[in-house]
Amino acid sequence: MTTLEAAWERIEAWYAAQGALDQLRPGAPEEQIAALEAFLGYPVSDDLRASLRRHDGSVEGGWPTGTLLDTAASQDEATVWRQLLDGGDFDDNAEHDASDGREQVERGWWSHGWVPLDADGGGNGAVVDMTPGPAGTVGQVLDMDHEVGPSGPQHGNLAGYLEEIASTLESGEYVVADGGVYAADEVEDE
Image (cartoon, rainbow, N blue to C red; front, side, top):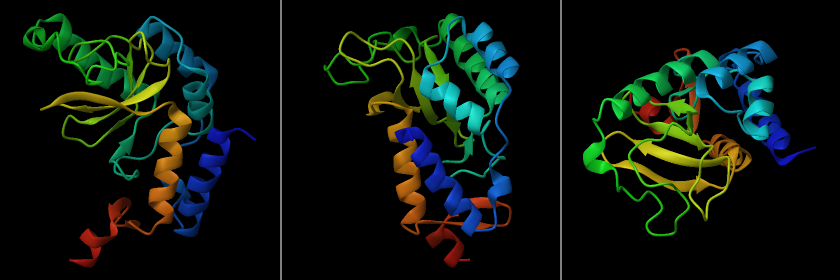
């Protein structure tokens, strides 16, 4: 069993224990992944392909960070960021260094080589980096904050991202309430 598969099993077990396995969408058929790749202009990483085949995202609000994007939502999110990049909106941030001099991430505020992974509904989320800097790794996961820009890598690969999600869920920090996944302390305060 791969690290990614083991992480997904832990995540699925948490959702099942919450009676909320339906928060995770069924896997994407190969045609949907191929359509995403055609839009992106390059193949996705093996980890991302395996993850999408297992679960094509979550329902809206059904993930600890907001929503785990399905193939269509990932494409929609990438379209917005690409339009801003191509329109020159990020020209003043062309030298933004997400990896603080470690050369793991190409400089800039956005890259066509990033695949949106999750979204919080406010313009922030994780991305899978398919075009890393010279010291980076294809498939590393970055954090993209619309106000402060990208940072990272946060994880060396998607499996690391999913392992952190699994650990966070297992820690009791999140609960399922009102059809979504929420921080436990937010639900308790209501």
